[in-house]
Length: 263
Image 1 (tube, rainbow, N blue to C red):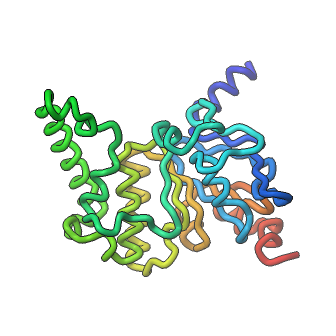
Image 2: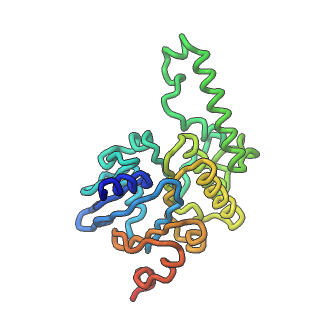
Image 3: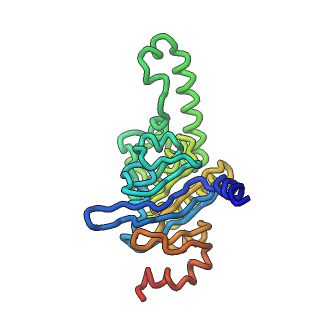
């Protein structure tokens, strides 16, 4: 009976992190960290500077390889996979400082994301050009639909490098959507963003979660945003999970208060 219960519980978890550790010399940036992210949730990940949050993101996406532990997506082990393979497993991320392709237009920034396009194969471009053209049209339609969804259609022909910080962060979310992800890891989506655009970003995250059934794991230092947007919220301290719960329980957790302010 317990085995059946475990199987049922695992089906609700999209991302499973168990005993993950990563050291740099004598420093354990992530230390035996374990938690799960449920399918369809907008899960917050908070903690003081140096708690290991961004390092954990890098481990999940394969930009760093863990020393120990297990990371699973849909019950499949991925802890030893490099980033290009985790991308194909449906794990995508944004960065605190946007990494847009500055000298390409907003629309072009979206259209380059799709991988394994037929046009990448010289043989196909010669002998099956209609297939290449059909894929290009589908890709364009998808990019335009995402720009409209993110309220960026009016900037489609603008160079991405000319956008404001908030617009660049919306563009990064758009680029993640082009890959049809299972989970999006957002690294401080509100950092450097004015309040109006921050509200737009929050609105679009909620809409993506509800309408497109995509899961989010969000690092953020803006406590008002994280408390209003995320449930559950996971707190990291010294590389490990310190607490997990809803906004009210985290706000009143004495261990969390001590981690931020000192006992």
